[in-house]
Image 1 (cartoon, rainbow, N blue to C red):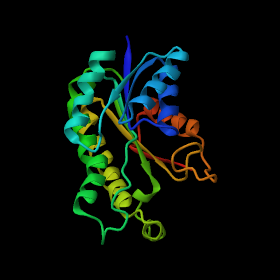
Image 2: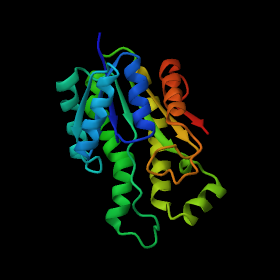
Image 3: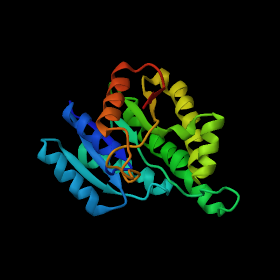
Image 4: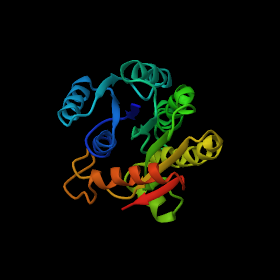
Length: 229
């Protein structure tokens, strides 16, 4: 039976590696992002590896747009087996100066839109064997004084609170959906991915390493949160 993974927030780095890893394991892949050209190039690269793929253009800062992704992916590739949420927003770096809309945008991507996609996909996830919601998170999510100081120093306060909220959402959904046999888990990436938009020449992590960790937790289906560094 065909399995379908929706990759939300597609780009170079983690999401590309996750798409390739799960595709190699027999999944069809729906790639979601705002940039249509980037999506088409991603589909072509996956198809060159023998992986069935589809491109879906969407603004994941908009929960309504995000929710519509599920029906489009289902129509193109079949019932949804798993979601990979890789989207994030860097808005509201300085919370004391940021516009309220920027704060809301950071939280919409991390929580509201993620939740909208999960809710829309639930009818499929509850029926599919080995269904899962897999979330990329960052080290700024952790409650640690040094990490908090780093978020302030590097003007990443909005991302920090969004990541912390996403961390709690993952753990709540893991408990809520466990009776439905839907696994929910996150990989907290403590480092920078080589080749990603954040790579300034000193990145320390390969996207393939993170993708391998996602595959590991997907198969093990135990703890809701693991870290990779």
